[in-house]
Image (cartoon, rainbow, N blue to C red; front, side):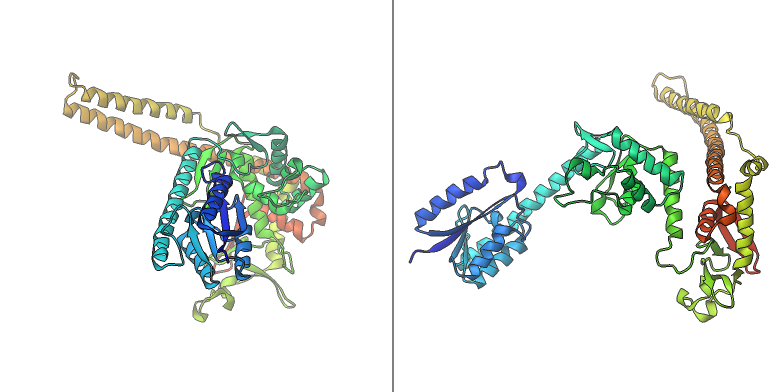
Length: 493
């Protein structure tokens, strides 16, 4: 009886055009089989499959047929056609050996798992195959990261609102308008991601993949908007002009493998920050499985132990108590917090009354608050600092000139004076910049107060627990409870 063999051929997507093409392997292996007097029982082909994975259709069929005894040997062009890792190569060869099937390589005559020396050669060759693969992958990763740092878009799924042109990420205006609208709904109107998704679907605005008629990585995708997709869009830093590459390879957004490069922005920094603030508030006030909606949820902090006060609605008492008093806080009995609780009727009543006053007459409140003007001194100070630094550079150049007139003592004296002047200007600019930043934040807070007043002024008398909670998280920064029961309320504006 002729010796029956199975021919196994594989090529990855990247190798389609190399000398290891499927056609080249077929002609070589069939000629070799004829020369050796083998009978080819079946030809197994995995086109476009990586050798680092065991899950390959033809390979799985080969293993199944080996169990049925259809052949005695598997003929391959080279060991890396069977597997690219040492562990996978050995496991496959051992599995075949247990079934009475050997492995033979055309281009590596020393590899023949049916002989002792062949097994030794097999191990050495498999190690070098794995080293070659790892080296190639590392070079590929390094080249990709270098291209990203140089500002080139290296492919992949582009964010909604963008498209790739000439290896650059550019704004796709028809979708960019939708992105700005989403950020506006969330950042300026306080919408939830669920409400945004519902509105986009109601307006029949197509998702990226419904428009293109394709899926993601070969999988079908929803043709309607979902809250999770809206949330990912809102958290994508690309929209503020910061494209991040490599984040899927790390456990956090600030991992060492992440590269951040500038790209065209779609939304302003102010709108981006406003949307993130809304997302944070929504996360704090999310009801999920909560039985009750508490107006001041997560806002009350204990001045003693630093824990958060939690709401309680009991038959005898309704209010907020420090979570540090509970056994569930993990504190020892003797160390549990003793700060007093707050009656819900008192604390919520006081906070709600002030909220109503703010929203009923926002301009009156803003007029009573002292304004801090952006100092005209700031640009002058920055100009002076730039001139002082330039003077310092010229002074050093003059001293280093062999024909220069400055002595070492004179140089050090003038240098010390310039360094003092630069330090004073830097300190002054820091103070002035803080003032300008405070004024900018105040203006944003004022606009938010006006927007809230315009939107909710007519609903204050009939506000339910959900609206009270929403407005409290917009307007209250923090509530701190002292050991004596005193309450300190920090308002956003």
